[in-house]
Image (cartoon, rainbow, N blue to C red; front, side, top):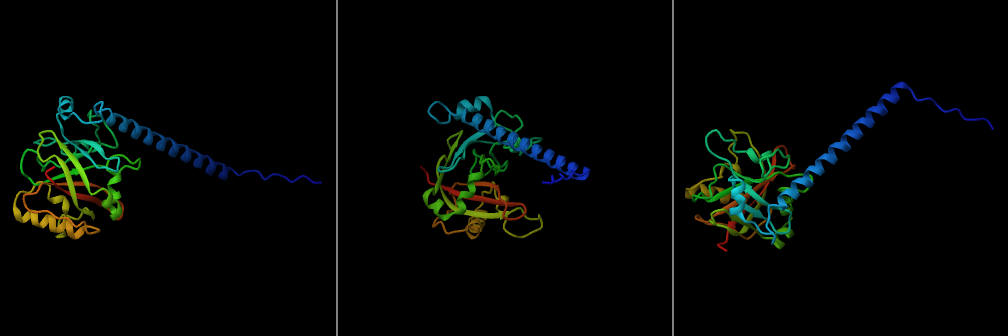
Length: 250
């Protein structure tokens, strides 16, 4: 029986295969590094809790005076400190890529808009968090695109360093939006992080209720403390997803 001759691999083909192998190995290394860092970040956040799984905000304040509270959303992995940086010459988005210890981190730490103030009656605390592929930070916020999930988890909790308006927040809206051009006259939820007047409150509540992807059966009245949790979404360019909660007084 005649032997079948093996075809020799051309130089061009070899180069393509080598390049593909390099890309594959590089991608694998990146993914491994990404998820390793995410795991280390989550471990560090868990270590901020006390032995009973609670949060001693006063003790944490001694370690980092940028902490203003803690946010927990039952049924999700959202259980993090909330940071805030504000003032002249201070980067208001410092924790976009910083962990609790102020070290660089892709995941960052949830942080409150500089225009929100837990010490004053600003009526809306706007808190941002990354949407991480690892499932960390505010990734699970988009669970609220499901009305069934909302019905099972209609509230979230906020602890504050000063105790003001802490406790349970009833969700009144779950919304998709985006970052719009500055000159656009469309409703921009992110432009209401620290309002105090009644008309602005009405515009905000009406705006988020109109955007809500389902009817929560809940609303808010002027004087209610609100918290807005916001993260990136990918339904459109510069997309965002957010939920708005009203303090129940509990």
